[in-house]
Image (cartoon, rainbow, N blue to C red; front, side, top):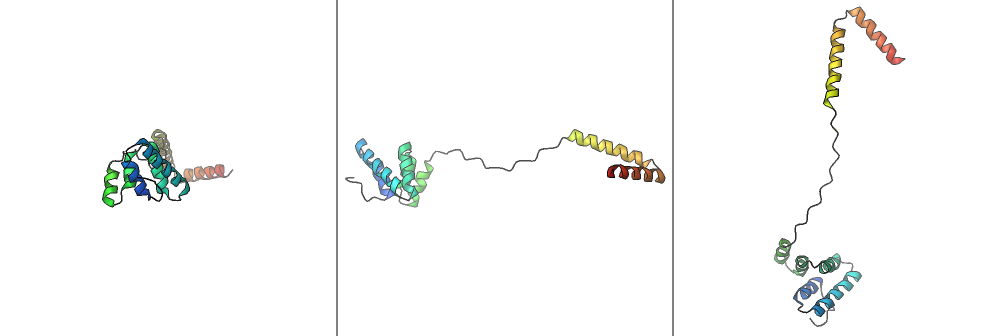
Length: 134
């Protein structure tokens, strides 16, 4: 690799992988960094980040020119923990003892009202409605 000037991203990645000396790698890394700054393509930035991180699996992925090569490179990626999916907040459970106590009080009231005759029940309901409306 004499002078890295008109390389594609895959060619630059392959040249970086094949570079034998540190100065050659540094020259290619500098070319890739400059290309990442000026290019609107995300692939150059990702290649640059992979080089900075020393992530050879991702560099190999960028160097792959066919689907089989990309698949092989993907198999080498470190399995990063997946982000947990955002879930809907769960409704808080209501306290059962209070519900049972309320149901018990309602049952007691219903059985007390069952014991009343029709006139007493009508008088109770009239008094109750008047109290609620007041």
